[in-house]
Image (cartoon, rainbow, N blue to C red; front, side, top):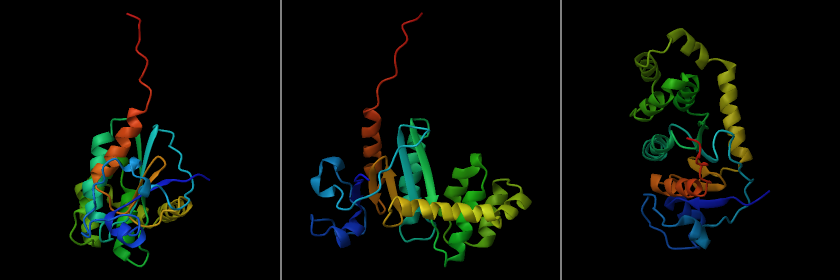
Length: 220
């Protein structure tokens, strides 16, 4: 087991790391310059080592849900921007939804995102997060507007495989010792809480800058 560097949003830091440094008392996340160079932000806990995935040398994971207080802003202002910025780069992006099982609408929205067709995933993601309130009829409307097959979609919502995906996400978060939702991971660096785009973007760019350049062909 190796330590995972851990970075906390201002809200979480005010409870856990208040004794380490002065933080903004606002609920807004703090953009922290040169995160990796601040000793106070190095991990104070032991986290299981995170290994980059197979599809890219820089692996980014998000652990979130649809109905937490900060998840909507985090999804639109951080997750979507990371996707739009790096979808054509050597970055593997994986999302894990861990719903509040006592919230039926959170569970329904999670099922919907697991049932959407791959090419419509981000349209579904954006549409659900922009809903003022999640309701069954709104999920059905979004699926219809995305021209998804109604019968297949409804069958997927009740399929045991869909429930298994939620359980797998929960287990993965537990394995990675993710302490709160939402959180993000960039390779071996854990960003606890609703961090702004700039924090994760800086970390991703630093990892990309370390990659060896592709060999230049000398053949005509």
